[in-house]
Amino acid sequence: MESGIIDVRVDDRMIHGIVATQWIPEKKATRGMVVNEGVANNNLIKQTLKMSVPTGVSLSVLAPQKAAENFKNGNYVGQRVFVVGKDIEDIYELFKLGIKFKRINLGNVTQNTGDTIVLDKTVRVNFKEKQMLKEMRDNGITVTCQFRPSDPLIICSSILD
Image 1 (cartoon, rainbow, N blue to C red):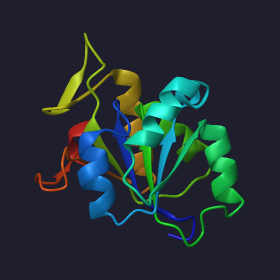
Image 2 (spheres, helix red, strand yellow; image 1 turned 30 degrees about the vertical axis):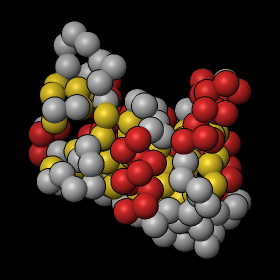
Image 3 (tube, helix red, strand yellow; image 1 turned 135 degrees about the horizontal axis):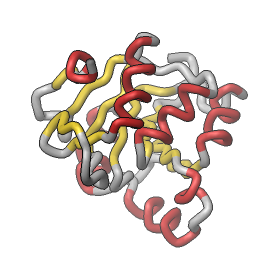
């Protein structure tokens, strides 16, 4: 896409083994981007994440508002940006700020407990997140569940109804 976004994932571990060694290389990403307000303001976590990306891949760790501004300003045109939100709400914020992307892949959404909907073995969403996903789906974004690139792709759109 013209913004530079090649894929969008939600993974509560952000940049970790599977994202760094499988997703980023699979997508031929030149930049990883973690979008989360709290992480963007935590220098220790930011430094740890920077050590996690493959050699030669840049990393941005930004609050959703700043990420949206950067995309709108064309900062990543010509790059291949793999966006990772720590939570569904991070990606929903990008969507609400007008950032266009084709899909949201739910890879690791395990922090939810209590009254949740299980979409896949590593994906549990609460009611509020389900509503966010439905809104994105209803605006043309494909909602998928896929832990590793080699796992079967599950289209979660109908599960949300």
